[in-house]
Image: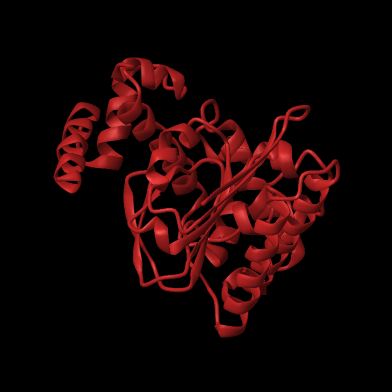
Length: 287
């Protein structure tokens, strides 16, 4: 079942998909929009295809994805999926820790599953029921009630992240730096490709950022920037008709050759070879 709430005045959207085996039919529409997502896998372990990268989503875990990601599920009928855009939740001033740019979406390791014990499973199940009931309540305060429920969901997941992740051991200042860097990359990756660029915006040295991320993440600042560029490059190559040179220009590369070298370094093949191999792979999976 697909629940949808829209606010025409702000453009805000909140979606909740429950036990929908045909979720893939929404995939192409949703990929063009900027949604954060929380995916609760209630069934056996399954494959989450995250921007054409297959990762395992274990049983009774939640994946938190920010607006940069698009995804598919092997068995969407086993999942509850919440999706919301900035206009719905973050146009309102929220505490930084539980906002669209908070710990859950920009401080937690990418696609790392959040584990739910039996108590948390029951609690999340009840919350999903309340969400479903509120989606059916049509009045002038429905949006505010749904925002309250969404904030409660984000707070619950943020608390679990703190307990299950090394970020819980970081100071508030360090967490703020991690979130700020990740968010700056998301907003500027097409024009700023160097750690030095972001360090200057944050009034920190590149070495300070590198030392912090070595404690917090398996990825260095350099890797985070490169991965975000590569993610968008793959998306543009796979889902648009733009040429390699056009993709390179859109991503801020001055020369097509520079972009081609970057892509080959990341993918191990050329943009053309990557697209060809992915088309063959997807046809084999569909068959």
